[in-house]
Every structure is written in C-alpha cells, then in structure tokens.
View 1 (spheres, one colour):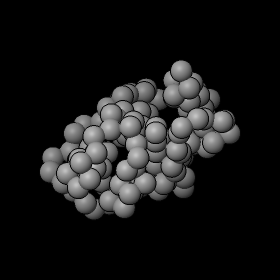
View 2: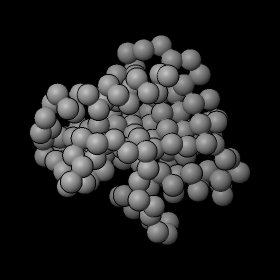
View 3: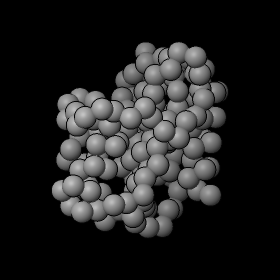
View 4: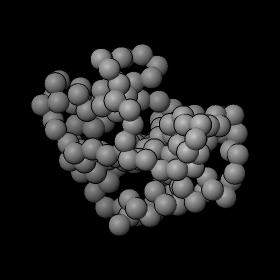
Amino acid sequence: MRIIIGYGNELRGEDAFGVDVIKELQKLSLKDTKLISVFQLTPEIVLEMLDADEIIFIDTCSNEKNHYKLACSLTQQNGLNLSHHIAPKTIIYMLESLYDKRPSFFIYSMMSSSFDEIMDLKKYRECVDIVVKHLLD
C-alpha cells in the first residue's frame, strides 16, 4: 500500500502546502493509496503506516532564497527528537526499530519564506499541481 501524508498548518499561509496537496488528491480515485492530512507528524502516526510499502511525505520547508522551488529531501535531523518538530526520518526509524517495517519513502517539500500568508497564489498553486501530477505518474 502507498501512503501519502501531507502535513502543515492551514492557518500559517504556505505552511499548508502538504495539506493542500492532500486535498487535491482526495478529489481523485487512487487505488491502493491511503491519504493522510495532519497538522504535524507525531509518533502515533506510525500506527497508520504499518501496512505501507511506500510512504510519501509532503511539507513546506523554510528557505529564504529559493521560494516556490520544490525539493525531494529535507536536511537530516540529528538524534531522535520526539517533540513538536518530529522529522519524517524519525517516523521511518520508528517503523524499522519498533515494527521491523522498511517501506521506501520520499519527501516532497516546497521551499518558502512565508509562514504568515500565501505570497503568490499562482506560484503556490503551480507547486501544488506539479506535486499532484508527479504523484499520479
């Protein structure tokens, strides 16, 4: 099973990117795919991913220089931080160490410098559409 998880805060402008991608995907009929939309990653989300062969994380990352650019990885976090800012790699580590599950995983991230509002709605929507199209291919 493929699991696509979009996360972010809809009240914080472009931080809603992952959630908005999931909203677009929910309009489609995707076979063998589970869509999850959450405010943030938490350890409990691991239980939703036990049947996953592939996990795709979608989020916004802060970057002052490359606003509205898409990336396929995030800076790796050091250590196991189980607080407010849990990283996708921590979720994967938990699946491996606690449940002996080793799904493949990918991260799609839109770089942004705005967490108060959507600065350019057209460019923002283009990024959402690009990721949705790529996930359908």
